[in-house]
Length: 73
Image (cartoon, rainbow, N blue to C red; front, side, top):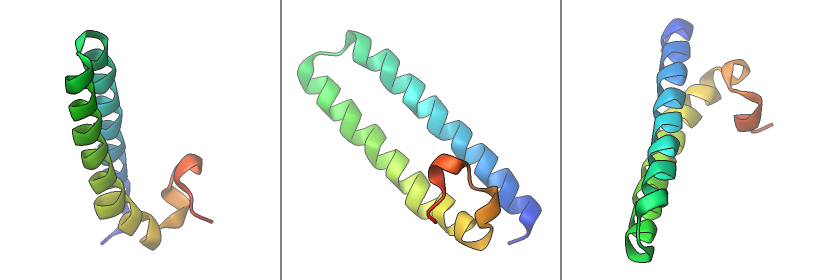
């Protein structure tokens, strides 16, 4: 993977993560307890896949492009 592709993937994946967090905040405002738990699990699972399946491999190749809060070393 080229550095340019890694940077684009990082930017897009982080944007999706921000959007999912925003969706969760909106859903939590109107959700009942059971739905809130379902939303948290679903969005948490998606966020985990984005990090472990997409971002972490990219940052393993190009650790310097990882945001400070996601740097592993």
